[in-house]
Image (cartoon, rainbow, N blue to C red; front, side, top):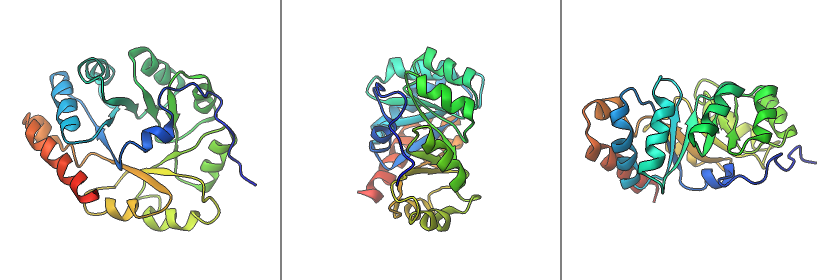
Length: 220
């Protein structure tokens, strides 16, 4: 018997499974300077990565999503660090194409069922995964990956939950991301190491593109 049910909302243009299937890596982007938003998105796309997660950790994050969507229409641009229903609604209003939360609450999951864009909830325990599945959610963000048990945790829960797939984020970096992707229940990983703050502050967009291409080359 499986706990998984059909999602409450099945008209999403980009369902979570589709988003996770676009590539093994989702850059986790923090925008402090709004002028960096468009060139950064273009640099990532030029490096062969289509799905971008803009975290809502700065005051300009929502506006950055608007600019990126207008300038790079072929990208799939979503919002991360979505903590509550009001933030989910704001993301819908500005045109985000999906949202990711570091955790889950019943209120957020219920609102996500009615949302026009896909909500990918975070989970760090089997109980949280089960709670999400009961409300129709699948797959999940595994966060904080390294602190919550990392590769060994994901490997151990594959037996009882073989149908569940994750995007592992949090402590995932250049040195260990391949270990996560080698697991059968990891569809992709998220991280900021492919968009390092040093390159962004220096407006080194070619450097970002080359770094994204290097990672893609490792995985091909």
